[in-house]
Length: 146
Picture 1 (cartoon, one colour):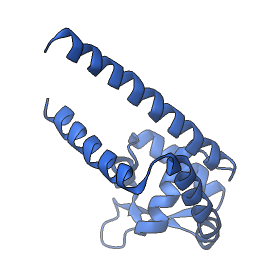
Picture 2 (cartoon, one colour):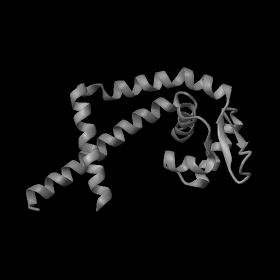
Picture 3 (cartoon, rainbow, N blue to C red):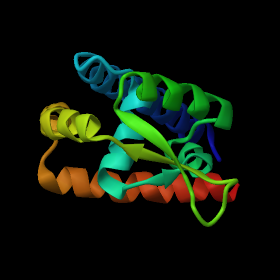
Picture 4 (spheres, rainbow, N blue to C red):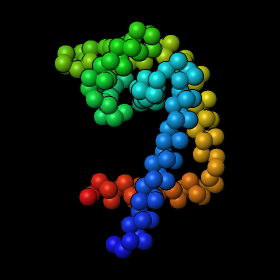
């Protein structure tokens, strides 16, 4: 790898990091307007779209430690947005279940959040979005293989 290639890789890292931070900050700002933090939103969104989930599995799906998931589930339970339900077949497994109040909240806020995400990415054409998705997947797979 020559100096120009190294400099280009460093520049790409900086640009990608800054873009990710700016996008993340805008998405988080939108989520907070609904009285939720990003982790609470991620858990609710998972339950809303995928149904009941074993609490032990939620962390893997929203990229959180098991201790953090317990804390978030406790908070969402206090807000009456989800509840815990024991698995009848295996007492060691407890499911997180979105409540009717949680569904109503997500019915209201998810379309608004989706619109906010669309606005954030509206700086790109449809073809550019598709191309960026493919390039970022390629980069991610390469990084994982290292």
